[in-house]
Image 1: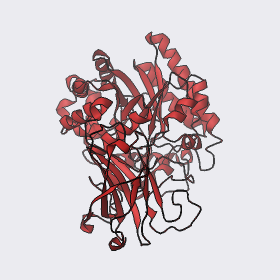
Image 2 (image 1 turned 120 degrees about the horizontal axis):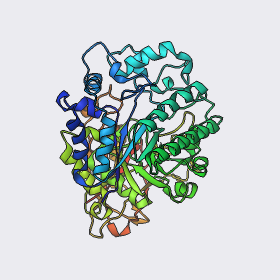
Image 3 (image 1 turned 135 degrees about the horizontal axis):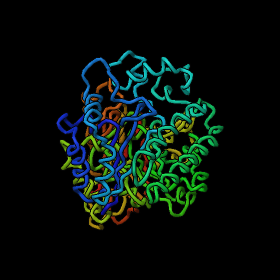
Image 4 (image 1 turned 45 degrees about the horizontal axis):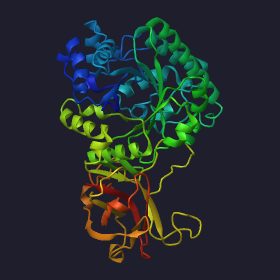
Length: 508
């Protein structure tokens, strides 16, 4: 089933393929490799980072970057240019030949490398560009007085020259390439305005997107076919508005044919707000969900495994997703393409996925504007800080919500609850736990080694439980009591020090 949109990002092909493949055949074969499973509906080819990834006449080009040392990224882009190979044209043509939608995706405000530049790490190709560019154009930054994170180096779209600059690349892409559709990737990085100007900037972005639709309309006359517009956006509607993305108005103006509900740093969202989005957007609009191997229960608490990806896909299908969207999975090609193809085949069809092992977890949306609630549920302390105010507590009781997705009546389901290292484990015993009001049977416990955690690595993914997990309790859950979307897990802890830092269902 062709149900997956797949993002070929800004660096994968140029960095992970050898110089010998910077040929027409080498470029074409990338699409052939992705097409093997038959599960990819559309390929989205990233056209820019902070510079253009093709021989642009309106933006600076990455082929011209010289970071002071041999770098396959810029070197391979130079090879393609010198050989007269327009890889985007080849990719789009080959996708069409294979019956795959060929899209171009543009990062609307990418800010990779700013922090590295500030630290003097100019060997990073992105930080080299940032260092040189922002020395010349500091006034264009959204927060020129701040240096602590990459996104403070993003463009300020409140400035007309910034919008004009980005529209120039949009026009060039439509003029140069015959595409099925064009995606505005607002999640790289999404911070479009100076702090405090996000709501005031909504109308500016609406006019900006309307201009893109006008450019696409003109290109349709030239190409003789419809060209769709897509947007990669925060999964939570309120967050999207807070960023300045007024999708409802964009939809009224005919500027939204497809949206992808996404995270930012890399975490599957098991509660995509699909019904809300479908109520707000035009009826014909496609709503995709970004799923991946990573799941974060809270900032820095990351798990990475294919069963996480399968669980995210099951939750997306159960929530009513039209299609799935993979981002950053391109880095599993070429060395792990067989594994990627296998998992894509599994997640592409809900009926196949039902027979595959998967995990669904308590995570958080992860794409928020500064000053907005993180919407994190975990970690939750075993001893409540405030009684009678948090409906998720109800005195000592703790309630978590977990999806299951579609599952077989014969499925084996294990609920795992992971606790922080400072938890008084000896007081937990066989913790009373109910799922959808039904008491569930204790399955066992295990302690997690503290030595696996590297203190200097903020984002250290593990295949089982996240970095803050020191102790795990597991429970058998009868498959027949579970719902596809959300299930209430009620926990009655003793009066003990510690926190729940992770919760998931393992379904086999």
